[in-house]
Amino acid sequence: MTETKLREEICLFGRSLFERGLTPGSSGNISVRLEDGGWLVTPTNASLGFLDPARLSRLDAQGHLLAGDRPTKEIPLHAAVYETRGPARAIVHLHSTHSVAVSMLPEIDPRAVLPPMTPYYLMRAGQTALVPYYRPGDPAVADAIRGLGGRYSSVLLANHGPVVAGESLEGAVFAAEELEETAKLYLLLRGLNPRYLSPAQVADLTAVFGLTLPEPDAGHAGCDGPACNHPDHHHHG
Image 1: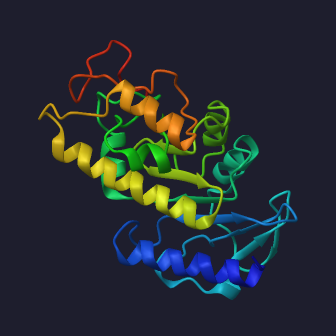
Image 2: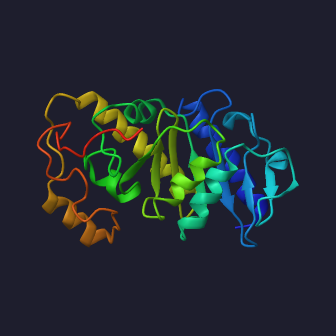
């Protein structure tokens, strides 16, 4: 895909996410990795609903600005994901309400923030890790991302929002949307003892669709309640 087309796609998907309330105001950012190792990334203080293709930040492989407006301050975060997650070609970072809400709950497991609720959550987002709170733009968040070793394509920043990588921009956007809908389901069902997918059902999905999940036990798979009450299912923030 040409750089011109990618610029248009970033603006199109950004507007779609913004108009549906998935990242308010000037929050959130999107990046796409280019064939020369550089990136296109949304500028700092830019609303995803009103992006100009010509003003997107064009960075070289070292992250230096070549053209366009000044880039988002979350560059260290994006760089750490690209560095550790080999297949990643695009990253979507949102401040989506339900995902942020889940990141603040005391019972969530930092290795698997959400239980296996639906097949499409596992197929698109895999499992989601929790990264403790860091102030926006803090370079230390990059070290926290590196500590995950590229095992996760979706990560929740505590009290901040999701960071989702994909092999294409469309894939990253769809995975971020799936994560947000699953977070919404979790909050709707919290305390109601819902049925999650069983370990056998997770194993079947993994085999049929070739999923690569970080934990061999699929995290929450087999839990019999929304909080799971395992001693290690606590908030590391």
